[in-house]
Image 1: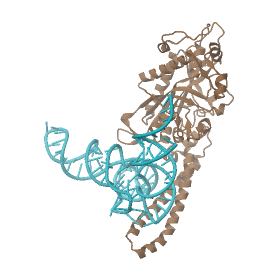
Image 2: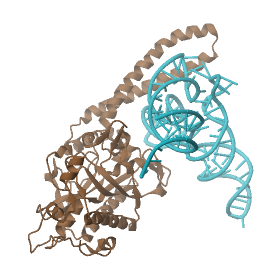
Image 3: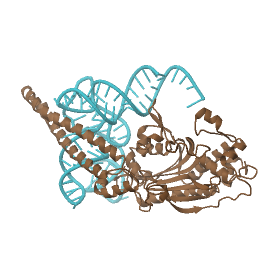
Length: 420
RNA sequence: GGAGGCGUCGCCUAGUCAGGUCUAUGGCGCCCGCCUGCUAAGCGGGUUUGGGGCUACAACCCCAUCGAGGGUUCAAAUCCCUCCGCCUCCGCCA
């Protein structure tokens, strides 16, 4: 969400951002509505002031005068009620439009309608060369008895899976390692609720657009979050933090739930696109300063890249185009990891700066050193998300003996084993 | 699942039964000033948040804000309804 004053002053910039992000948003109409709301607000304020003065006078008046006054008041009161209704209606329309206002993308973002306009920033690491016929993660896991698909899908439907045996240990090792790395970098580990209220999803920016993508539990008026980010933003929404508290660095762990409605029928086999997965999320709340949040963006990106390098995986870092980055984002870098079975890079991480867009929506503020209240900046990136990353790891480090060679950084979590 | 208590402008708190004197009390903390070897104490002033107006800014003015949203009323912190949160107890339970 953007600042109404900013929209007023820079309607052209906002309209351009909407166009670049492929949104159907009429900023002119929004500006008109904003003016209307302000005009009505002033009228309501004046009418309420009058009513207040009237009530005081009424309290002092005698019986006869009161009867007279009541008659006089009736018209004014009806007028006020009508104004209020009108204001409520206009405000509701405005709020609706405000939720659709895009974050202004940074100047370095490629302008384009979708991911085809993304640019590769760098490609890192060596793709594996096999002197045997490599298997896909699905083939490998099935051969080793490390996964249940058919049985799991009897239980839980399309895209369901159950990991078994050593693969479970490997998954845990990946998460433990990622968490430890983040702790080393001063992030606070936190396990967050995934069963969340609608307000948390709206505050994050997931709703209203992502409603279709989210599992709803209508009996309890709750939703299953698609990422820990929802709870992490929610934890501090409506708060005024002290600048001394910032930056707030979280390593959020949680299961994640996604309906994958937009990609029905795609990637239905295997572990690349599932409805339920495990993630360690990097999340930052920092001061409202472009240079500071840019630095955190680099840190989040570096942490993800460090993880991939430590795991011995080849990847590319992508600068996401305006049309690919989503409503609220200022800057987004996807990291795509090499999957030998696909012979291509697939997204495993997504690093985003939300600027103040998300924090404004969630009403997440802080008091700076001068005592001025400001909207914070928020950023997030994946640290690890499995099973997708687990699949990448297995495919890249498989051996001719249908084993997986364990990257050195994970061995400590697996009793020193070099192969599983 | 059942029963009860509570939610006031950073923290604590008065006010809610009996609506108007609430322009929300007092204390603590914090900020500014005075005083003062320095500090503390003392004294004086200030200190919720959001929106709008006026402005070069500030000052100032208006409206809202007593967990949130509705309602009753000339008038709501106070009365009514719904929701949210916290606490206590009973039941069930990993």
